[in-house]
Length: 299
Image 1 (cartoon, rainbow, N blue to C red):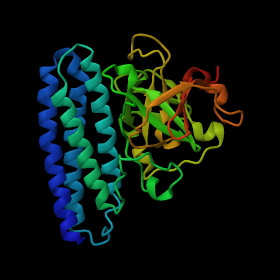
Image 2: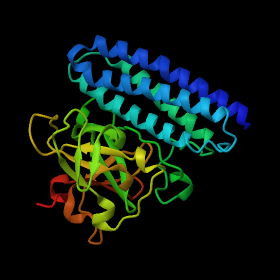
Image 3: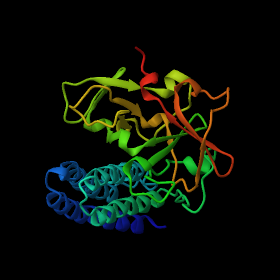
Image 4: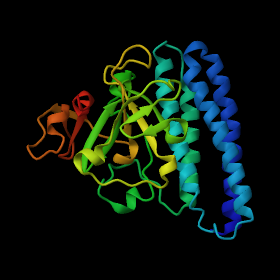
């Protein structure tokens, strides 16, 4: 693909993101009080679109940026925005309000991310089959975040994200995920994290790479995202007990399509065996586990 075409496509994606931000904002207003989180997604989408416009304008006159390496950061940020939007939509669903339009916009965000990702030369993952988490081609330059359900259900507790840490397949309920944000939106320092909207609050930062000696690496440290986990499914301000986890420690895998089997104990050699609250055998002979995040905190 020529440089001129890449620049043109980036401009198109920026325009789509800008238009999408308005659509998301309108849907957030329609949702009323429950749409506040969705409104934040709209604001972040608008900001990302503006930044992408600026990036393309500079790239047009910068002959040293022929590989468009910076697009990876925009693709990754848009992917996480789609995850945020999905989480917020599920929250609105609790009110029995229709969320069809919200989910359409979630997919639109994801498609923009995939489009930007292809400009970096990376192949989009296939959702038809479960990916090989050890495949270097699959995790470079990053793996798309995705929200999924292994069964036909509308219950929020049945939806989860699938991760892997050190080659171990992990999963976490969306009910326990408060938000996924970016280091530029909050203060990450040492072993604590200050969530967006709570500047005076410091919460524990779980660094799985440091604790278990796992490999980690991200495209740009300034864009390193953080996942907020609240094991009790409570929102900020209601009670203590939410933790931050560096996404850099986790390879985020694409949709997991399988029939859930039965609860089973993880093998003895499982690095996180003592931190597992639930383990499933699934079709294909693989196990996925749900972490006990409380047990990962040094007390």
